[in-house]
Image (cartoon, rainbow over all chains, first blue to last red; front, side, top):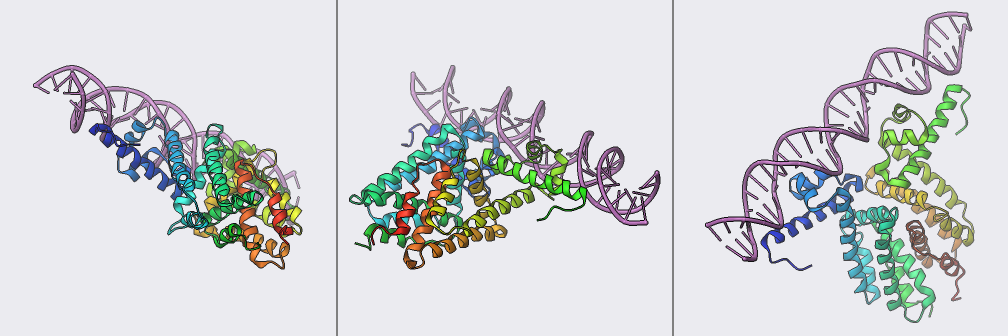
Amino acid sequence: MPEPVDGRLRKGERRRRALLDATLRLVGRGGAAAVTQRAVAAEAGVPPSAVLYYFDTVDDLLVAALIAVNDRYVVRLDAVGTVDALADLVADCARQDRLPAIAEYELFLHAARRDDLRAELHRWDTALAAAAVRLLPQAPDRRPLLVAAVNGLCLAAALGSPYDTGVLTRLVDGVDE
Amino acid sequence: MPEPVDGRLRKGERRRRALLDATLRLVGRGGAAAVTQRAVAAEAGVPPSAVLYYFDTVDDLLVAALIAVNDRYVVRLDAVGTVDALADLVADCARQDRLPAIAEYELFLHAARRDDLRAELHRWDTALAAAAVRLLPQAPDRRPLLVAAVNGLCLAAALGSPYDTGVLTRLVDGVDE
DNA sequence: TCACAACTGGAGCGTTCGCTCAGGAATCGG
DNA sequence: CCGATTCCTGAGCGAACGCTCCAGTTGTGA
């Protein structure tokens, strides 16, 4: 996603991203229902009509936000090479305020209801499964447990429940061996 | 919750439950945003004004639906005495259509954003933790992993991702011992 | 410099929303 | 059988919604 050379396109791209960021903040704060044309415009500091200039519909904006946030997480997941990195990723779900993490789950649920967005969910699954293969190359039978644990810990972190990433370390290091 | 003797109250109580059921169906189908006075009324087969007669506001209806569905799951969780029972509970999250499970997570996210509903989330956590104690009385260090795995599997089931409850059985039975 | 494409933003249409309220229907005690 | 009481409802108000439209502005490549 390189910055366009055209000054007009560059400014447009900046506004586009501002709208996506504003959307994510709104989803975290008030759910997908809070993403209205006027609310997004106010949050991003642009006139309401600009929202429908950069995105055909408000729903398109929501979908674009889901894809954007998923991109970020999948990239991070693909870079995970150690248990500690994975634990950090989980811990980030609960950093200072949990609203971004809540927003992501909200969007995931939104995607789960729509056939045309199922592929986005699959991206996360496959990225996590691939990370499990890298972390547990010689223990295939433990990988599903690792996957389930990561999902459970991320959810607990997002919901504000107590969680302990130490279980991941113990699971991967294999305290029983 | 015994049936009242008064004919008027009895009919009211039936309608009240019909509204809660309709709300859950709508949340599963279209998210919390789909729960509007008119939509709930149509789904439950009652006039729109009845919604605001039985619940002070539409938001109150949503909160009541969350508490009702949480009640069901906590009761089931409290009755879990074996790993198989726990695995069944997880598997039920993905029975025929996943909409009910999606609805529950939607409501959980809704609760996570509101301080006055945090207690509802805590009820699930404590019930699950208590079940972990019963299933792993002699392995306290494995309980957090069991909790995380159950949460992760439920979520995966609700989202339509592949999952395998066998990891729970292997974890509790302790294949390494 | 100029024609054009990209961008801005205000006005407003039709729809649906949450919620209020006066009054009709059902049920009670006597 | 009949007030009295409670339960229930259709109509509608003000507000916010998604979206369309178009005149005006800005920056670009020729």
